[in-house]
Length: 190
Image (cartoon, rainbow, N blue to C red; front, top):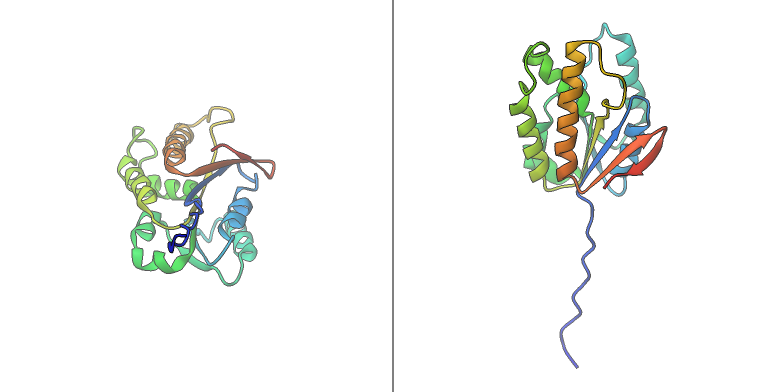
């Protein structure tokens, strides 16, 4: 008879999840459910509120109303900085980033790059992908899937579609799991 206790089985928890979907697909609500199970949640809202845009302000208000009161909310247009701040991450539990499309839009705006060649935001997207890849805690990322429709009529629309498509591919490659939300229904991609 051995005096060694059995080695406990390790349960592998998913660390990084990418949630993709179109507008009004239910991707944010699905991601919120994933992040909330179990434990505390740090909600990273990437939207920059423009008080003159009443429609967008209403969308943000609906998201705020839906969130549990005990979640920590960080309103920041810089998810890379938030993810690399380990002091905050350790106490956060799961971190939910909603969403990467608004962050990418803000970066293109900040660089005044809407008429620039593709890849102008590469340094920003590279840093973000690196931060996601090295983040040591539970992470749920929401991003729009915009490449399934018609080709945008404007250059800026095509630029955004191409940049978010490339970024989504890079994120999917490093995430442990990925879902596509269609009509409120999740389809597991990975």
